[in-house]
Image (tube, rainbow, N blue to C red; front, side, top):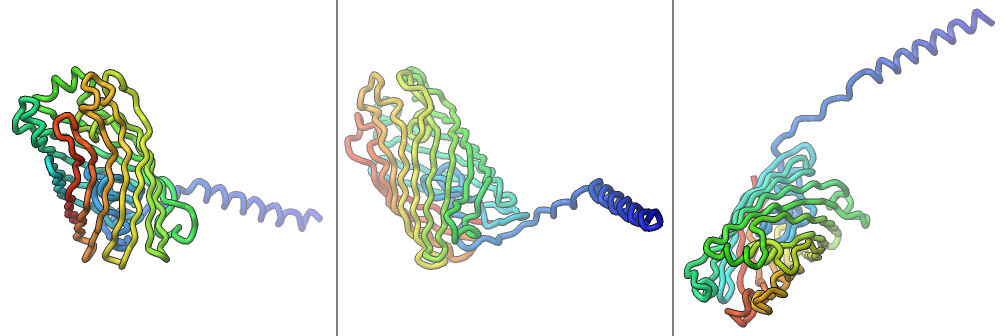
Length: 310
C-alpha cells in the first residue's frame, strides 16, 4: 500500500506546486491601444452642442469616434444654430478610448440678438466653455442588438459661462457662473430594423443650458430632467430622427416673472455619413421662448453641424 501511496502523494504535490506557480504568475498584459475605426457607420453618433457623442441636443451612451475595444479615435465638430432672433456657433473635439471612456471639450458663442440692446448691452455675446467626461460601463449597442440590454454610460459636463456685461444681472438673480451636469444614458440599437432609441436622465441646474448661469435665488437646487432621442437608419449612411430635451425653469419665479421663462427643446434631424471620416447633420430646431419679455415668439430655426472623425 505504501508503495502505491508514495507516487500518488508525489503527483498531488507536483500538481499543487504547479498550480501555485501559475497563481503567482502575473496576468498577461492588456494589448496596447491602437488607432482604429471598427464601429459600424453612424453607430458612434454625432457631436452634441455640448461636445459629447450622441444626437445634436442630448448625449447617448456611445463614445466618440469609431474606435472599438483596445482602440482610440477622435472627432472634431463645428455647429451653427440660427433662429428668428438668435444665433449660436459651437465647436469642439472629443477623444474616445477603448470604447469605454470619452473626453470632450466644447465652446459655445451665443449672439443675444435684440435682447442685448433691450438690456443696454448691444452686441452682447454669451460664451460658454464645456469639459465633458463619459464612462461606458455596461452593454454594447451592436453586440447586444438582439437582446433588450442597452448600452449604458454615465457622464458629466462642467460648464463655465462668460456673460460679459450681463454677469451683474445674473448674480443679482442668484445664478452662478459655473456648474456641473451629471447624466445617465441608455442607448438601444435594434440592428435588424435600424432603429435606435436613447434615454438620458440629466441632473442639472443650468439656465438655458448654462448660457444664463446656474440656479437662481428662488430655485437653486439640482433637478432631474429627461431627454429622449429616436433615430431610424434609412440606409447604412443615412439616418433621420427626433429629439426632446426637458429643461429646468430656475429663473422664471424671479422678480422678472415670466420674462425669463424657460421652455424645453426639440428637433427633427437628418444625419448623413458618406464615410467614417465625415458626417453632416441638419435639423429643424424648436428652442421655445427665450427671454419672452423681449421677444414674444417661439424661437425655431435651422441647425447645421459638421463632424470630422479620425
